[in-house]
Image (cartoon, rainbow, N blue to C red):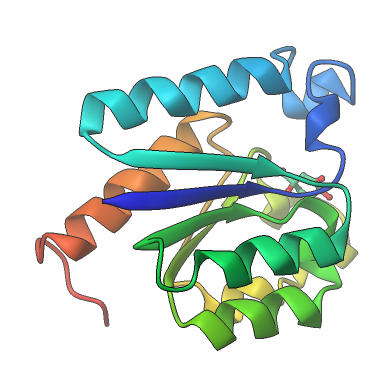
Length: 149
Ligand code: DQA
């Protein structure tokens, strides 16, 4: 199983940016965490971060025909980007939305998620673990252990 882990703007600043919300661990630590559970679960994981919306669109398009699913934390683009939503719809890959923080308990403008419309599940407020939960969810879906409904 091949999964693309996609991270949006400012996630490269993890550890520095608002540690009370996003924690003290760095982006490198997040990458190591993802690589670790991928090894454990037998997943071939590819990790990509960009501060640029178009680069994220390109990465989603490049996953077409190559990847079995996408785990995406679009960061601020969650709340603004029709382009990311359209890209996910275009490739038609199974996608799970992840947020480190619990966006449902934050500002009003974070209550809108465009990408969610193309995702089969959202994990928010679980910190790094949300990425693992998303990967396990996609594994279970692919293995037929849960329905796609
Ligand atoms: C975030 C939540 C977004 O609202 C915010 O813009 C981010 C990070 C999260 O992981 O909690 O940059 O996606």
